[in-house]
Length: 191
Image (cartoon, helix red, strand yellow):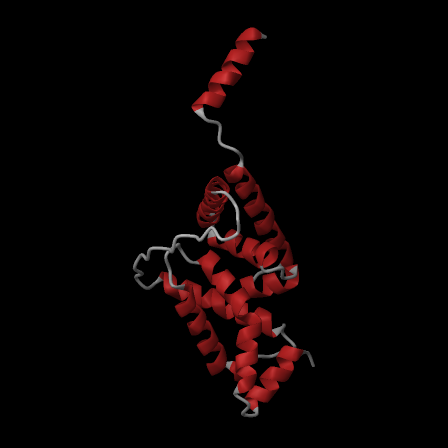
């Protein structure tokens, strides 16, 4: 019996502190999954609370023979995100980053632009590809665990992941500016 199964067993036996340990252990993975599956500006913390509340309510349905607790929990997160798409949302302004890490503002802007492009690229992917990418590449789940959460076969999941990576590579390819095109044009004229 692994640590999560033991905590579930304790929780079902009435030990409420066991649930706090499960939340602490899996909160980052749940929030990261929600953040990628939801549009920018959503309240990830509220949705994470919904995920843990649903897990608490349905804890008796968890079956460790079908997969790990983390896999089961991230499947709940996927479902909560799907249901949240059906509800109207309000846009929220994000907080400005603090530059306490010693990097220059230009480095922060460059990194922020890359993350914006990555976020836009992830949002542009079909939900199945985005989910496959998040589960395998960001959450570090095995293909089998990710396939279970995505409710598909391992081969289909690998195919979706391959297409997601190809699309993201294309979207993240450096964009040629007009100045770059002019230099390439001049070089071709000289040749």
